[in-house]
Length: 413
Image (cartoon, rainbow, N blue to C red; front, side):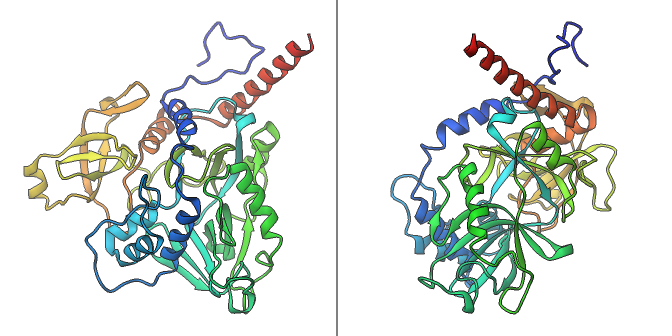
């Protein structure tokens, strides 16, 4: 509820319940310091996406293309990634995609610093075109499609320039209309966009896509259509458009991108996902039967020391299991486990959740790649008790607008 002394001339903003903004500020400050060779990162990812699965196993960790200091050779990264099997392969490929945090608190300066779009429901994947072929891979590394496309060098008919030149798109495949909806661009004709701002990447997505016939209906040399997701400024008009306008795809919430953010692999607070019942069929997590459970469920990873952790980097510990229980239940480190939590066992301390008691609910199947992130667990908890509503996002936008107008008035005076 709004405080009794609230100024009616200003929109009421829900008080922050997390440390999301603090981490967002830190991410913006340090992203330049984390820069690696952008071209090498893009090339190693392209080679890995194009590499055929290897029949041999490899117990050695994959060198990271983002490592500091002496960077591994591109071929070493691609070869090692291609040899990975099972959980290791799924984890490696999943870490190459930029994943949003769940919006727990509305960011300040939403209208000034953020873009917004309606997120398509579907399969998140990376698409690479090179040497006359196009391949899409899911987050777990599994090949979704291998096909000809009108992307640069994406079919034998469309090769221009060096055949090995590659493009990498971050997409969501929407099965009902068999369309790849582009949510981001990592590389285009060999030019890496890792270290470019989101604002520039979205400009390139739209301008470069029009240079091809990738948006045309499917044909012999163009199996699937590619379409850029409409991206808006997070003004009142833009937010309303993303939230309310009809789309050719099924919506699954809203995606927010900080305009200044680079493409960072893994979970980042500079990209956010938000949902409510009006723009998504699935706001609250469901159980294996598709029903919303009475108690909130969380998915955590079992570590060697018995601790239960989130997928964040660094991970957050939400509890632990005794060695006796682990042995009795035939559990192993790396297993993803489902737990239920009671409301009375949850506390918020310095913007993070503390869970007093977890109830073991079972082991997950192997198709799942990662545990829940802390922001997802907190979003799900808030959605059950004090959800962040569209009115809160509108209030954040209006607050930014009023600040800008106030500054303009002061400058005129």
